[in-house]
Each structure stands twice: as C-alpha cells, then as structure tokens.
Length: 561
Image (tube, rainbow, N blue to C red):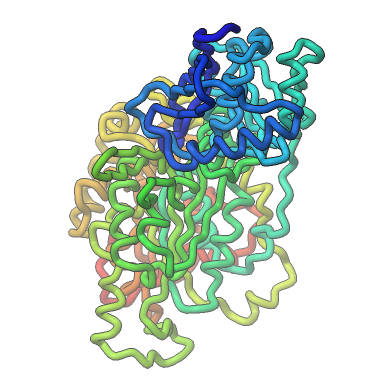
C-alpha cells in the first residue's frame, strides 16, 4: 500500500451479547509523526496506542514516523474494550506496505500485550456468527478463543498467540495458523443423582413434571426436608441442549468472557439471596447480562426465595412472561434472552417450623404474615407448580433401597420433550411452558368431558386467574406427554391442579386429622394400588409406601380442588 491509501480491516464490538460490525480504516500520510484514533473510541481503545507501539517494537517494527489516522466506523457507535488492538495494528501494518491478502475478508479480534502476545477477548462466538452473516471468509482471533469460533460452521477460523505470526503472514513468509485446540467431545459427569433422595415421591414427581415441560416450580416446606437436595439434582435429569440452544447459551457466556468452547450442558445458576437486582436481572452503567440471562435455556435456582430483595424478586415478573429482559438506559435499550426454568425453595415462616409437626414455631403471627407476603400474588401466579415438601419418617430416611435413578427419569423427560418438539415445531418453540395463548388453544383442545372437569376445578378453587388457568392447561399437557397420550384427559387436569396451590407457604400444613388429595380428589385412606391413574406415573416396581408420597396433605377444612 502507498501513502494516502486507506486500508480496511473488518472487526466488531459488542452491544450486549450481539456483535456489531466495525470497519477499521487506516491512512498514512506524510507529515510530522502523529497517531490519532477517531470514531467514538472509548478510553481503553485510545490507550491501545501504547500497547500497539510496544507490541510492534517487540517484533522488530514500529509505528511509521508519519501521520497515522485510524477511523472506526460507524462513527456514531461507541466502541469500548480492547479487542480492537489487533485489527488496528494490522491496519497500520497493511497501510505501511504489508500484504493485505492474508487478512482479506477476515473479521479480526484480539488484545495485544506489550510483548506482542495476543490475549483473549470477549464475544468471539458472536463475532464468528457475525462473520458468517456478513458473508466474510472467516475470523482471525486469539488462539485461546478459537474453540468458541469453531462452534460456527462454514467459516475459516485462524488462531494466533503472538503478533509475530500475523507479521510473518503479511510479509508472505508464512500462512496464518489454524487453531491448535481440537473440537472437544464432552461427556456428562455428575457426582449427584436422584437415587440419593429418600421418600418425597410427590416432590420428585412435581420436579419431573416441571423439567419435562419447562415449568416453573416452588418447593415449600420446613428446613431439612430435601428441597435444596432435590433442586441441586435437577441438572441430572435435564434434556440435552439442541444445537441452536447451545449456540444461544454460549453466546451469552462468551459476551462475559466465560465461555470455553461450545456449552453443551444446560446451565444451572444458584445465586445467593444477597444478590442485587442488577446482578440478577442484568444492568450496570454499561449493561451486562445478569443471572437470569446466564440461566438462559437452563435452570435458575433461588434458594430461600423470600430472603431475596423485593426488587430482585418482583423484577422476575416480566422475564417469566416474555422470556427476555429489557434493560433501559439513557443512551440505549438492551434486550437480553432470559428463557429459564425457575426453581424456588422457601420455608413457611422465618423460623421454618410453622405447622411442621416436628417443632414448635417461634414466630409471631405478624412476622409470619410479613414473611409470606414477600412472595407476591402476581409472582406466585406465574409459578406453574407449587409443592409442599413434607418431613419424612426415620424409616424412609434409613431405607437402604435407592430411589429412582436420574438416568431413568431423564429418559422419560427426553421422550416427553421429543413429543413437544414435534408438536410445537411449526410455532418455533421447544416446550409446553413457552406456549402462548394462541398456540395453547391450537394444540391443547379439550373434549366436552375435560371442559366440564376444568370448569369444576376452577369453580372449586375460586382462586384461578386467566393466567393460572392457561398454566394449568400447559402442565396438564405435559402430564399427557409424560404418559404418552395425544389428548389431555380429566386425570391430567386433576393431576396438574394437585400440584398447584394459591399460597404454598401458608397452606399444606400436616395435621393429625387430615384428608389427602390424589389428583384433585379427596380420599380418607391411601390406597395407591386402587388408583391406576396415580400408578401410571410411577414404575410398577415402586413400593406402596413410596407411592403414598405422591399425595398432598391438607387441613381437614381445606377447600377441595
């Protein structure tokens, strides 16, 4: 290239989790030595002049002793970060006489160290996806980030660890190196399993139902009953990520520099209850994804849910409905994905022992009421399954027989998800929980008998809203999928209703005199063998004592569903 000729290197910057194209233009003219970067560059980009000069000196060259002008287009887009170091250095080298062919039609990213090392940057997967969408030949990225770019098909990927490798290619003495990191095959390794859980068949069934359909679930009950233990084992029964879901998830993690190749397991996020609203939902002066976006296509577990700040908890309302979160600032508005399965765990009162039948509650009525009000009605209305986890007996706890293994449950979950994927493919969604009202009406039609059963359930409960009725139907649809049925039956509706209560913190309190509800029907005794509907959801080899766990215990004066 000669003096006064503008060279162009393709690059990008991050806007949330998406890559936005940036053209790095360089022009070298005669005049007093001067280096200038224009185009709304952030301070970190302008400071790159020091890094670039030192890196060039480390490979035996330097910035030209001429007037060097670098333009970052578009000029009205702010460009933060240090990923533009390498493309700016290449633009200067090409403008100063280097060969442009090796980097032609490549999207270039990388931070330079003072010694010329090319350091990892954020958002490489998004950059590779942008290169493919822009019909570029491929990407040139730091070697340590190359595994992310390899996740995108049909593009060339080059990984460099030092500026010298690029300089040799521009001089025509070598070719750009291909990545040294091979495509990895990951295996599922779990150190926990559902078989470790003793008893709690009702809670286990509710969790299977939640995972199979992607439904939100709240586990309420006294301390030490297994709520957290059950929730921590949910990853062992999650279905595998599809290719599209894996790319979506990795894109979020890549934007924060947390990805190391394609993420193939569904994320499980469990933030502490002291987390701020911005950290949970996303935000900051420069908006960044929060925990709900990091849980995209996976599970968000909120242990001790009432202990979270009200702003954090109530901020979940819109993401639970829209499956995305919008972060608005003065200069911009950012939309981030947030399609996750919410799993909450809560005690019935501050001390945890209200009406537990184990210990005496030491809380005042006022403190219990305040505690229960921390989970508002509108938020609970968005939680599909609400299950009380009762204390188990010593006999159940010390039973040597293991519970049903995660692998067996996962097979049923995958089979149910496969049915949903086929049925919902025309609508572009993956599971029952994602259905809109229109899709729900189109795919979950009820016959006259089921419509009458639904009307009876709504009339008996008196507390169902329009939203909760839709969610009841979605859960019933999942129950039918688990049973391998094409149509929703009365039993599916009753079963769905039995796993949902208006206020799980205040209800489901065991008493000495009690009735039990099985699939929405009240009986005086437990006789699982006489209930073929209940038995169909469990393995025939399960003991009668285990099957007893799939009932909800209520006060004798509780309203029948």
